[in-house]
Amino acid sequence: MSAGARTGFYFDERTFWHGGGNYASLLPVGGFVEPLVAGGLPEGPEAKRRLKSLLDVSGLMGQLAPTGADPATGEELRRVHDPEYLRRFKALSDEGGGEIGLRAPFGPGGYEIAALSAGLAVAAVRDVLSGGLANAYALCRPPGHHCLPDWPNGFCLLANIAIAVEAALAEGRAGRVAVLDWDVHHGNGTEAIFHDRAEVLTVSIHQERNYPLDTGAFDDRGEGAGLGANLNIPLPPGAGHVAWMAAMERLALPAIESFAPDLIVVASGYDAALVDPLGRMVLSAASFRAMTEATMAVADRVSRGRLVLVHEGGYSEVYAPFCGHAAIAALAGAEGLEDPFGAAVEARQPAADVDRFLLQRIDAMAAAL
Ligand code: ZN
Image (cartoon, rainbow, N blue to C red; front, top):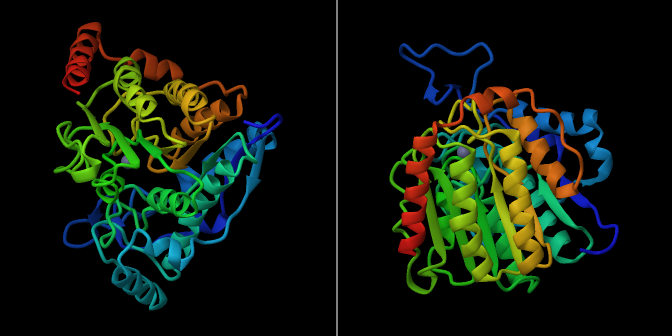
């Protein structure tokens, strides 16, 4: 990192305007499913808008280099996505919105907002690789890690991280990239896009059989030229700080370090935190700070500190902002905030014998690599 270089922060107010679909939580409204007064999918703007607000009111934003970005270009999108999918998405967006895949609705202009979200990740990666920043955070919305080349799902309409990684590879800014996904859900889209590729390592720590149900198994190590360049670390519901840090330190980070990437990109979801409605894990803001710092240490050793965090899930409108703030404070080397849920999370950590069971399971995975 160059002297005095800052942490870039990429965001755009318009990403908070993405919406669409008549859902009550994960269920389409209809029959006996009553519309919610403040309705919609769990992936609403509040958790992300409130993270940006918390950065402002805490003063941390003043220590970052905040900026916007251009939307991802058609060429950048087509490196990942099927042109026919992009055409259908744009046409339906122009007609007022709708839905193509599963739980990934969009309103009018949804295509442009999704391209902007991807563009934030592209710009963050490009600027970190060009050396002007210490590291960066992209507050992307809609998220991206579930999206397949031709099928949006799980709130994800474009594969933000994959688009950014492909741009970096195509522009010759990086030759090898590692993507670490600590969202509580499996990063199935990123995995699928790079499944047969040797130059991109994909690692996902997630709650097993949460979403999607049929992907994310430990024994899926990639295919063809990509065999060995995919690592899934499924953890059972209820895992806490000890197990997640062991998954990082005994599995995820050693795999990344031995892969020796030019860049590490983190799919940073906060839905493994306590009180998240779509996860059943027991992490705190301090856990996200610790995971970020551990990843920064590896980045310092293998990728000259080049690290970009891209926002994915995190559906507690109250807690996800504190978790995101902790990760960003770590990136910037800044003081964190007092965690209003800290004592509650601490009191709900698994019992020692549960942690022992989880550590045995993690060690068994490490032994099987
Ligand atoms: Zn998630």
